[in-house]
Amino acid sequence: MASRFLPAVIENALDDNRALRRVLVRGTGRARHILTFCGNCRIAGIGALFLTGTSEPFLHRLHQSGRAFAHYLRNVGNADVRLSLSRPFFDAVGAGDFDGAALIAQHARRTWAQGEEYEEDFLFIEFLIQHGVLGAKVADCEDLLARYERALRGAEDLRLDVCRALLQADAEAFNQALALFLSDRKDRLEAQAETTTFPEELLATEWNFSLEGLVLARLAERSGLETEEDYLHVPSLARAPARTRPGEDSWMEGD
Image (tube, rainbow, N blue to C red; front, side):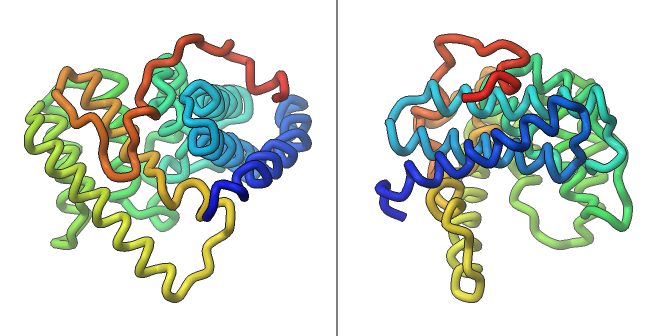
C-alpha cells in the first residue's frame, strides 16, 4: 500500500484507542479490549516507522503496548488471554523494554490451553520468555524445544530452527534460520492473499514488517550473537536503541 494511506491508518488506530483507553483505565476492559488496544499501538508504530523513517515513534508505541498489557494482566488477570495470543509480549521485546517483558512473563498465563491453542504456538512464546527474558537453565530450555518438536508430530515449523540456534548461541545458524523463516513468511502471506482479502491496515504495516523477526533479532543481540544489519521485513532502523524511555504508564496518557 502506498505511503499516502499511512496517515489515515495511523489516525484510525489512535482514534480507536482513545475510546479503548478509557475502558482499560477504568479497569472494565476484557481480553478483546486490551488485545485490540495493543494491536492499534502496533499498527500506529509500524505506520510511523514507514512514514517518518525514524524509530522513536515506533519504539514508543511498542513500549505502550507492552506496558498496557502488563498492567492488564497484573490487575485483571490472565484467565481470558492464552499465551499464544500474547503478541504484546513481542511488542515489549521489540521495543527493547525487557523490564516490561519480564512483567508480562510474571503475570501471563504460562500453561498450555489445550484445545484452545496449538501447543507449538504456546511453546514458541514460552521458550522466548524462558530463554530470552528470564534466563532459564539451558537444560530446561532444551526440554522445552524437545517438547516443541514432539508437538509438531513431524510437521515443519521454521521457528523451531531459529530457537535451536538461539539456544546453541550459533550466529551462523541463527542468521540462516531467521532468513529462511522470514522468506517463508513472505511466501505464505502472498499465497494467502490469493484467496483472502487482508485488512488495509495490515497491508500498510505488518505485511512488510515482521514483529516476530524483530523479536528474534533483538534476543540474538541480547545473547551476544553477531546478527545481520538488515533482514527481510526487519529493517535495521527498527532495531535502533531508544533515545528516551517512556514511563510505565505512558499508555494511559493519550497521544
